[in-house]
Amino acid sequence: MPELPSGFLSTGFLAGLGLFLFNVVRADLKAMDTRHREDMKELRDKVDALPSKILELLRAANQPVTPER
Image (cartoon, rainbow, N blue to C red):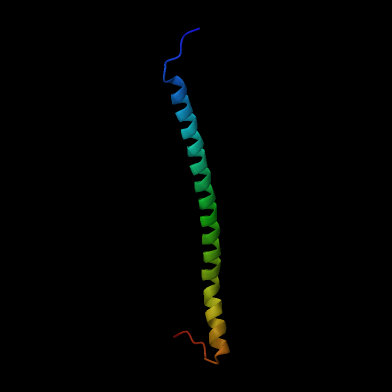
């Protein structure tokens, strides 16, 4: 059986550690992306509801709603 180079095990260990850390960071980025998408969806829903809320507030204040406003 051929002899392994002297630094082989430490190189393998560092490669394994690097792979582990890469996967941890990748999982964190995926979770962050998921949270970002959920936040954007919530924000879009709020922005879409704004015109109707404004009209409701104007009607509640007994202000006539005209196209000029």
